[in-house]
Image (tube, rainbow over all chains, first blue to last red; front, top):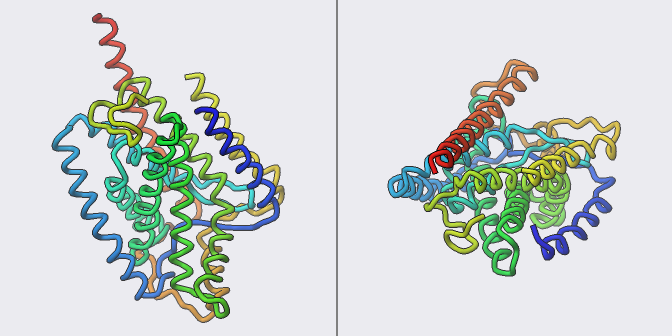
Length: 251
Length: 94
């Protein structure tokens, strides 16, 4: 954590609490059957290449660095824990974090498409949370839009001088928000408003989804840094991890 | 590890604050309510697919969510503990 980081985050937090002290909102994955067939198929088609690319990359990582399995397990377990935590938000509703930031920082975004897919499948089959028909859309939001945003934020903030931890914090935070922005966009495309169309609908969904999600995004980012600290303390990051911020950097 | 304690404390505060700010809110899960937003836009929309299997009750659902979190936490704790042990042994040898 460093000075630049605080200069950017403190005003943002102040603005947020002022802005959403009255809003009501709810956010989560799109439920089973709640995307029209056309959009369910479109998002499955969009998500599949990322999933296949992720499986390919995952196999390569494990082949080249068998010792990476341990940290891979931690990244997946972290997603498991965080996506099971339904946290309260200042808007008076609950939602859950995604936990994708950690694995993204360690293995890059594409590997997370596989881990996200597994978690979403588990929740759709066992918990009636999300759904199989909407798994393509939810997968794209949580396991593609989130991790890729997190990745680029980590790279960019690293370039402008954030410490590794601050960069990962920012990446995890904005990656979480990107997931729910993507969900809003998916819902807006499928359900445009009668007046104002997709844009009006998107504004509505985004307003509804994002306010709930912001404190959860901060929580997620905090927990991500906790685990990064643990990895660093026990030198678990190993040789195979290329932190986006400078290869082989110590955290 | 002092740093981690502070981070976890911050996490607990963020999680607890809503109960004071939005006192009296129902803190409902969003599953149903996200659907309400859709039906507000398109009152005639009918979900065309349903869950293959649904937890028998809210309690059973909590059980499964708790199980999911427990499995995750167990895996993290196992690997971190393993690494700690390895580190300690290495240090003893030196």
